[in-house]
Image (cartoon, rainbow, N blue to C red; front, side, top):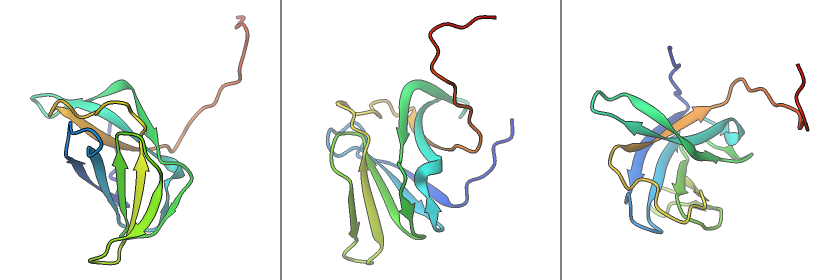
Length: 131
């Protein structure tokens, strides 16, 4: 499978992994984008640098418009959304929270993966399925 490059975002990594209330994913935007198409999942990176997505770990950014050269900081724990400017560079910084009650990146082989949803299918609620 060939996965296209995502030039609109740079995933810098996880800061303070496995430290409660400090663990966060740091991302830099390269162009103006709507985050509604993006999410984060967690993967396990093995010795051959193959990343295997894990179940039950998904974060959706929400319907937020972001300017180029902005920072996205996603804390693994609970908290409130904030939009601020960095005092040194005046760049915009958006702080989001995954809402987990525990740190996510306790193992150094666990890595964040940004996904872009380009095609999806949405099913109807059904009580029973017949053939």
